[in-house]
Amino acid sequence: MDATVNRAEAPPVPSAFPREIPIQYGTAILVLVLVAAPLLPVLLQSLLDGALYDDTYNFTLGNFTRLARTEGFGLVLVNTVVLAALTTIVAQFLGTVAAILFGRTDVPGSRVLSEFFLWPLYLSALVLSFGWYAFYGPAGYLTLLWESLFGDAPWTLYSLGGMAVIAGVSQAPLAYIYCLSSATITDPSLEEAARVSGAGTFRTLWRITLPLMKPAIAYSAVLNFTIGLELLSIPLIFGDPAGITVLTTFLFNNGISSPRPDHGLVATAAALMLVVVCFLVWLQGKMLGNTRRFVTLGGKATRPRPFRLGVLRWPLFAIAAIYILATVIAPMGLLVLRAFTSFLSPMVPLSDVLTLGNFVTIFDYPIYSRAVWNSFVVSLVGGALATGLIGLIAIIVHRSEFRFRGALHYLALFPRAVPGVVAGIGFFYAFALVPGLGTLRNSIWILVIAFTMRFIPAGLGAVAPMLLQVSQDLDRAARVQGADWWTTSRRIVLPLMRPALVGCFTILFISFFKEYSTAIFLFAPGSEVIGTALLQLWVQGEVGLVAALATIQVAVIAVCVAAVRGIFGVKLHG
Image (tube, rainbow, N blue to C red; front, side, top):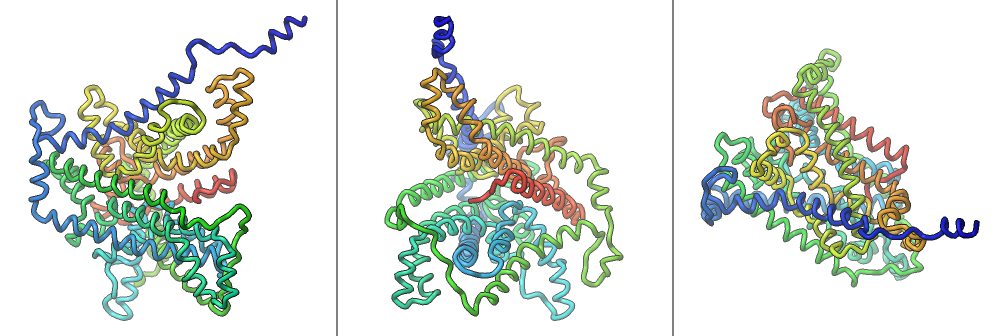
């Protein structure tokens, strides 16, 4: 009996070939293939005088010379930098002011205002652009109303300034999140010292709080400038009709929308964008690592108390409410209303134009209903597969002794430096180059692969912080009992990560569902998604159908956000 008990309690003998080896190396190789697949073909194509998939071509540096000599390309670069810079200025100003106002003052309704301020983060810039067009465009509701009362409207969206305002509103939540995190952990003793010295609310904010937010402001500014360089939808909708071309629309117009694409020129421009964005992402990392002189929070810090605004509480609340109404609620509300009307104008009674015809058309035409269905499949299945991969990456990087875990971590974060248009072009070349992938290239699975590669860093950012909070004593206890790395990870670590994995899946579902810039270079008949269908309908001038399809996208994302918050209590932002 004793021998039986001893045998039952003896730790299991480790296998001669540990299971973690194929899992860890397999994951690392998969991530390497995902990241390298779109990059190497773009770089190679930029050095060829013919298409990558042709039988005959020669290596050359002539594409770089041709690009530099392309008529108007210098202006394209200037427009790109100016738009990104103006967008960054708008986004940083709005995000910083909102972080201080909603996070550090006693302004009424700060929590509700903050939620509405963040909504552009959940929406595609493409959909937000359509909303602004419906409200502020040449035939927009407010524009027509203004012209009927006062004459010509004093604004235009068809300019670098107009596009920068839309993009700035879309990207302001990113600046808000970074600045809010910084503003709410400031050492309160510094602000209290300023108050004791006689400094008022605004002087303390200007001399103490704002300077301590400089790392967050600078880091988010580089991030927003990077995103500004990658913008496609806003310049495509408002810039192209006005003759304003930026680098992304240059790639679009000379790539898929051209009857005879110049692959060498497109790949060279994409490689240029990739190099610039890589440098900016490197700069972000350097800035993040050079912030020790701004550290003020010690071990016994408490949350700083809100600044009292006094008589300015309600005026500032009114300004914030007007901003949210003008930039988010009114444009998106008009877009949804446009989906339920045949025509929308302040001169026509709403009751005369109400209809469900736009939605009937969407679901009657296979190409549009298929786009909705494909978006669901790509987001659900792709999001689940990507979440599983990201969970594996996280436990390998942070909870294993894998010798290449540092390199794997770098690889997993590298897609931050790959713009969506470059990823789309790269995967197009990769699938055209490799024999036997033609069937996959014409299906939704190429979108799943491309979207997964693009959003690995976003998913890892949702999972890694929680994993780092779980004590490694649990892993050690399991290993002492004889469990190998995979058993420990599967039975202990991954179950504890469930809330983070739910948040990761939700972020990926929303990101996949609203993505368009990568898909526009990859979709084929039968593999359309909502983003590509929206652009096609826009080109055809079908504003009502655009509004209906955009409304479906907004409704799905709203339900997703509400469900994950209500059921799981997971926040999707910092």
